Length: 352
Image 1 (tube, rainbow, N blue to C red):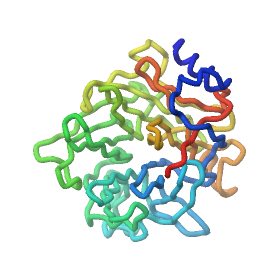
Image 2: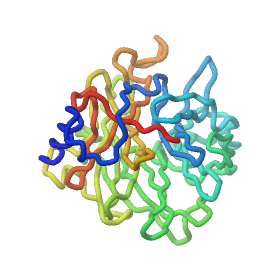
Image 3: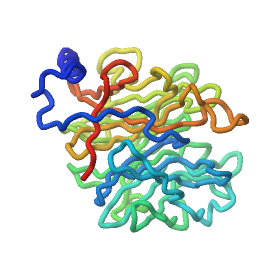
């Protein structure tokens, strides 16, 4: 950890200029970067130079927004653009559960993976994985007309598509409920699973529902230095029993086996992002690189000073978006959070 302490000291006190060579002058900002309900954020950088953020449904001005979309030139200043999925899919036209979108661009087309509750849902059948496409980052996205996969309860949620640069395979990670996070190869069309493929379990919740994390969800995978890092969250995202946090595991293969931070270091947990200052129940992150290649984590958290949108809402349901810098130390991510006293201010590079 000594190298991490040196990096923090250099950044905090303005010395060691060569530690972050070619880094532009820092620009201060304050979290949250999007001070409105914007849960489960995915942030990507598009060819037009803007960052686009997508989030779970919410209510704005008395109207439901199915999938939120916002845009920013610099990760800090965000403009809400409206609904990326203005028309509900025909198979989920009567419900209002549109969760956790992930967007990936391929060949000029954008693919949105998300979760929705079908009109046929009953006590046994819950949410489905779904795919919609658009030729523009802001949408509108149009659903395929049928779900990718459905199942009981809320196991089929939080999809994240990942193109493995080593093998060229297209993968989909997903999972929640009280089941493991899974991965399965997608077909070349990106809208179906590869023939002959099957899901593989990667990270499990605690054996007891009385232990943390009782459930795991919100997978996000990045490849760095030949390793694959799986960020995930658990367990209660919101409401009266919210206790969300971000954890991490790593592997030499996108299919695992994954070693959690807890297993690698013998620590009580694998948490890398927990409650700090006014920010409660942080989680369901995405990771994006800025123009200089530095990594940032975008995630939602509850502001304890305003934990609900309306007085009638449950507590801890207004989840705003924050971003923080990621450093890598001894093969593991470390998140720098100014509100925790790590730095006077993080650095954001404006995209040109």
